[in-house]
Amino acid sequence: MSEEVNFEELKLPITDHLKTYPLNEQREIFEYLNEMDEINRKAYLIAHDHLKTSFNIARSNGFKEWKQSKTKSK
Image (cartoon, rainbow, N blue to C red; front, side, top):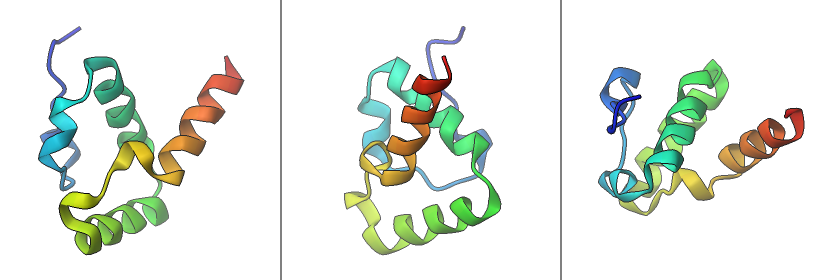
C-alpha cells in the first residue's frame, strides 16, 4: 500500500493539518470521506466552509460514529 494518501482524488476540500496525522488515521479518514452519502457530503462541505482551518474531521461526530460502527462490525 502507498505511503501517502491521495486526498485530491476525493475532490473535497481538505485542511492541511490532516496530512500531519498518522498514516493509518489518514487512511481511515480517506475511507470515511469516500463512503459518505450525499447528505453527509453536503454537511462536510458546509462545516469545512464555515469553520475553515479549525474544522477537524477526526473529531467530528460523523467520523466518530462511522469509526465506532466499523469497530462493532468486526
